[in-house]
Length: 152
Image 1 (spheres, one colour):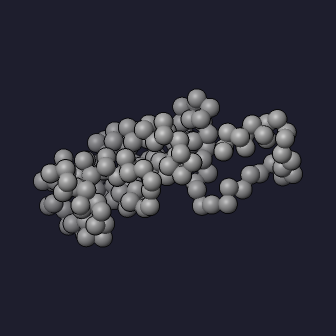
Image 2: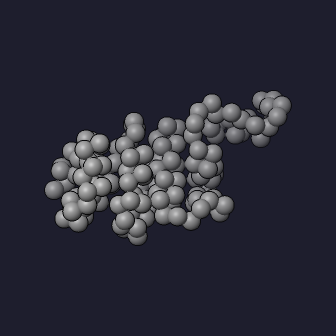
């Protein structure tokens, strides 16, 4: 669908008076840009003007995954999961990871990112169960708890 819209705009088939396409949703413009870069064979990454904080990186990738899931771009979903796994291991602080975990557990058709989070949490279980914030998050996100247990 997006490819059709992009090609139609390039070829001038559709008249867009203000040259702005309103997707009518609350998708992150940066995530949409990343998806379009991927579709056109360009590498995607976080925009240069974004803050360099690790949780921003994790949240950015969850947002890209959500857009890739919504518009059914399976190759981008696979790429996002691999980048997300690397970031998880690079930044093991749960306070940084928690917002991304919560965002990843919103409604999705593809559960690959959730599965990657569960595997990571199961791997780090001895350390995480000592963390009161992690226990609190598990009680709020029952699917995460069930997923972690399935990998133990």
